[in-house]
Amino acid sequence: MAYAKSRKRYRIKYKNVAILLAILLIIILLISRGCSALFSKKDKPSPNNTLASEDSEEADPNDLTSQMTTDPTLQTSYYFQSVKVTDADLGVGDLVLVNNNIKFLGSVSEDSLDVVREKKNQAYSVSNYTVKVQPHVMEALNRMLLDFYNATGNDGVMVRAGFRTLEYQQELYDEELASTGQDYSTLVALPGYSEHHTGLAVDFTTYLNNVYKDFDGTGDYEWIMENCYKYGFVNRYPSGKESLTLIDNEPWHFRYVGVAHATAMHNLDYCLEEYIDYLKNYTILNGLFMITTDDGSQYISYYTPKSNGDYTDIFLPEINHETKELYPYEISGNNVDGWIVTFLYKEGNGVIAPTAPETEPEVTTAPEDGGNAQEADNNEEE
Ligand SMILES: [Zn+2]
Image (cartoon, rainbow, N blue to C red):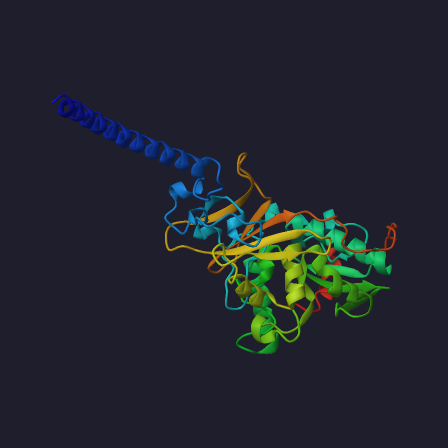
């Protein structure tokens, strides 16, 4: 009996121990689960955990739970924040595409523009006080034409057109039709469809030794055709691309798109129509486009299509996830169906063109008042 009793007692004890063990096991399991959840949120670089994921119904790059990488062209190398843009922003930025089929959606306030005559340096001339461009274009223009002068000793470039109002474009268009007797023009763009409405475009002519000549990009001026991309300009209507640009070859018309994109267009030999299309291959989900400029800077760019809603989320990468600091970035609408983000991934050494030592250009006696604008306006166009 005693055996039986004690055996029973032991059995009960074993039962208690088993229950205790089971409870302990459950507790251990719960604790370890909790820990791993904490770790995955705090210590592991999981791209699940940033601001942007809170308010977006669109594809959120931070939602992709793949491993963080160090390839700068993959979205998994970054944490992102988002900003909202609306369709009204489609026409804002250096990459707006404007041509005979695509009306400029933006509007540029004349007051925000620089008068070239007031801001220019002595390395070139300007036809009159009405020629205006956006301030960042003014700065690039001054640098390019000073470097051109220092490289060639030629100060014959004359800027003869910049920003145009709708009214002025209408005048040019009407004059062109009257002079050709045609119903339409392949040289002058319809009002609203000219790049000159953006404040990002300039037309050159030349004035040297009291002689006006069309700017044809030959001789000394070849330097500008070859080097303009280093300053952010592209020759907008090159020969061979007429079927895409819908404008005849115009060596005198330059468009500012920024150094990174001008470099990429130069390397790819794309006109703006081709390039804006090409950039659509690069999205946060598909992979990002890296551009290395001549000074060794690395820029990364990608396209975000406009959403069907009231706004579109544009995702911007962080340099530092703790401080939320962003890479220096620019967002430009493409003036059609989306936005292009460009950010500076790595800064270069700032050296773009070896030029002769800077000398003070001689001041020429080029007439820079309205009186000779007529002569300078030898090729009114788009
Ligand atoms: Zn032009």
